[in-house]
Amino acid sequence: MNFHHISVLPDEVLQYLTPKDEERFIDCTLGGGGHSGLVLQASPQVSLLGVDQDENALAAATENLAEFGDRFTSIRMNFGDLADLQDSDWNQVDGILMDIGVSSHQIDDADRGFSYMNDGPLDMRMDRRQTLTAATLLNEADESELSRIFWVYGEEKEARRIAKAVVNDRVEKPWERTREFSEMVTRVVGRKKKGNAPAPAKCFQALRIAVNRELEVLESGLQAAFELLKPGGRLVVICFHSLEDRMVKHFFKEKAQACICPPEFPVCQCSKVQELKPLTRKAVKASKNEIAQNSRAACCRLRAAQKLI
Image 1 (cartoon, rainbow, N blue to C red):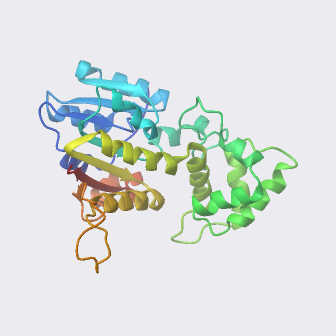
Image 2 (spheres, rainbow, N blue to C red; image 1 turned 180 degrees about the horizontal axis):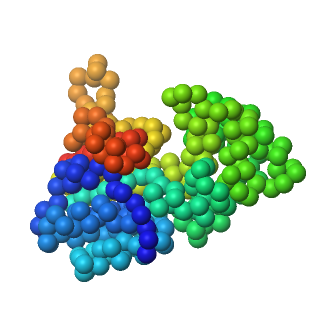
């Protein structure tokens, strides 16, 4: 299967996961299996579970990682449901990787509707078993909800104007295609100013996040991943936009904090203990050399931490 995707920060992922003999890992966003293959190659006795909600990704990874035999297994699952693995053989693992966001294959496949640069159906579902699509949102959500989606998830300053245009235009014809939506956004907002992301790109990001409930999924997935790790286990998360990165940063900070009692308390009364040790002082970014070879690595941010208890 042709599932093209270049895994970002490959060296850094291995650096912080540090796979060793007999260790077990979960790749929560399997994709085509690029990161998973690197982990499995690191030691002949490493085993890994690949998780993905996209059936095309699972099929491609199964083919790409066939050489590793039963050391690799996969499951179709949204990583927000990782807690379901608590009663499986994959609890208490040594490392978990989350590479958040849309894959190159999904972006480049016009039929998936993720890219404003290609014409296709307004779909944007990562798991095509679900019924909610971008078209459904654009045709059924009210103006205030659409404005909230474009402002909160896309950080688009003209969110209200775009939402108003969406509602006005759908009276004449329901929203169906990516190109017509992209052209409408450009008509309302105008061409991008130098140094700013195009408004259609921000609106497409916002719709994708809303359709796939990405922030809610990340919140539940982070907590479930922490619980699946054994003491000493490593959690590595790669994000591609600020909303997700802030959520990961806050999660790590909260878990790395010990006593949170007011400073005037002579003795700790909260009983909070440090649960994670950050392995990255700040977000790790792709090198200039990697960005030159893969422009989509330019906005990625990696954070890593180790579970203490």
